[in-house]
Length: 429
Image (tube, rainbow, N blue to C red; front, side, top):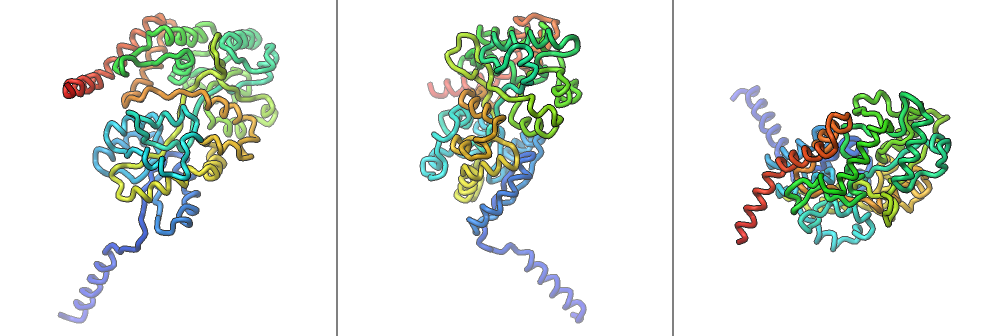
């Protein structure tokens, strides 16, 4: 072998040795986080790694639009991360795939995570089949954003607490606004608003063990009639989200006085509304149906949770990260970075939240939230809700016909679920 050949062989051998994995004693956790949260959580990781020098966290930011598909693909392909942020309505789907681990025993043994410190409706979104599969990371619900000046001019110095007060306020506002302006913005391609109204009246949405749609129930029919009536009465424009030019400019211009939306818009309203408008808007919990024994009315229990995947080789280390991210002080810091609301009641005692008048309404609303039906098909069903109601909104069919169409669509979606449940029953027999 020539000297040149020997040097090349030596260099190749050295490079191969350098590529061999080394046991450094450090465990690396793969954490998939979504959207803005995927960027911001990286700022929290150094403190966790400082406390746990044997653990390294590799955060991968996943765009929200791709997250659901990517998670399902990873479950099928056996390439799941150790930990992920998921929308809490995705948990039934992930449990049906057997992808995520139950957490009840870990919570019972935790000195950090106290179930009684979480808003009950939010905690319940993480329970499937009687077992806990996720830990709430941040919460999301919807309530009223409103123009205080327009409401006061209509004779309502305080936000409405009942549906009849709310309807009267909207009628007065519309009468004062004139043509081309409205009382409330309700984008027709969103399902949350009719679902909220239905939940307020006690609608279950599904029936017979979540085997069939129940949108023709008296409760949801009443809610749908109220909802569709807002459009037919000229109180709300029949606009989709793509038809809303700029929600902040239009709100400031008085194109509408009420807007049902979520906590992310607190920061957006503060940034995007002109300075002269900052003292003319507030948030308020949802009005309750007339005759209701509770206030506020019910809203949706949304948000994101942290789930531990069964295939993780480092469940103990993952749980340490979940506990860290669940600490009230860490959640308050996370709120400061993102505007996301913490799921723990104790975190709301920190000055940055306790002293914020615009988030106070969310604190009240979170005591009255209800989870979506816990079926893997809910994401698909939710789209059918607004698609079925839109023809009624536009006057092309009656509310009854729209709800019959909706139940028919939902029953088709749930056909496979009925087959599976029937098979299980036959097997038990």
